[in-house]
Picture 1 (tube, one colour):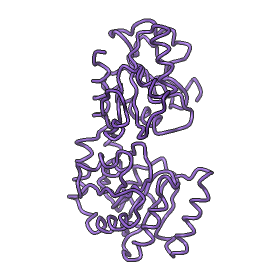
Picture 2 (tube, one colour):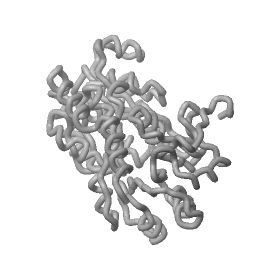
Picture 3 (cartoon, helix red, strand yellow):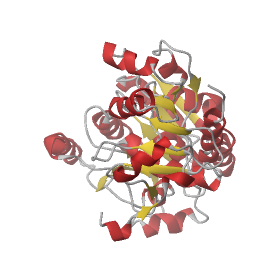
Picture 4 (cartoon, rainbow, N blue to C red):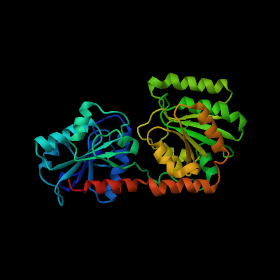
Length: 356
């Protein structure tokens, strides 16, 4: 991104630094992009550092890092909020070797045993955040669970669902089941397609949408799925619509959402669907069970991962009751009360301000 398009700020007014040292877009990068504006609206004075982030966010220059030796205006230290190993290490060097007044915070989303190196880095942190209770169980240090939230203004039900469907080029008379995200085996796209092939012939008023991109190494996987759909005679009812930047508009076309992942770090798609008033069937991976649990059967159903018969049953059950304003309101209220991004940002601010 050109410098002229990037907003640079003076470190003197920055209280929290969110480093992003990975160029390719990832879930961590997306989290930073969504959170920083909300944190700043709440007065937390956050700036980002590193590539791959949009210019409208407040950026620090690498050449200004020497200014971190001076305490920020109105605070005893700055917070260095790392989310990867490659971001924890520089924080440790700046705090312990260069003696900069920094408080080191690390957010872990991993749901596996950490390497010895990662454990060492985590032990050097002043505070550790887990994105779910399941993630917390893998940490060997005291930690605080702060779950991700979403923008409930961006993800909200359509005022006119038929119009929302027409706007995306869909039949307003059909009900739609969606599966959104990268098209690959890990994401369970094949389980969704196989479920739709089994279910749709018995439900003529329904169709399915696969929205997401297959990266080059997964093109053959996507083509094989499309071939299955064609062989089943459902190419006009199981639609592969590709990747869309206006994904919130596509959620508004749905009557049911399926998250069929075999593995997930956290996973926001069930929240995005429920915030839009759409009930969910999700596998028990990532934080899905924690996201849906309080919603009980109205907002969603959690099933075992990689279990096609369970997905078929849950989908059929949910289809029979997946419409109506009461269910949509329950789904929306569940997210609004528990998973707004403003709640996540507020809890981060409280943790930043805790004494060491």
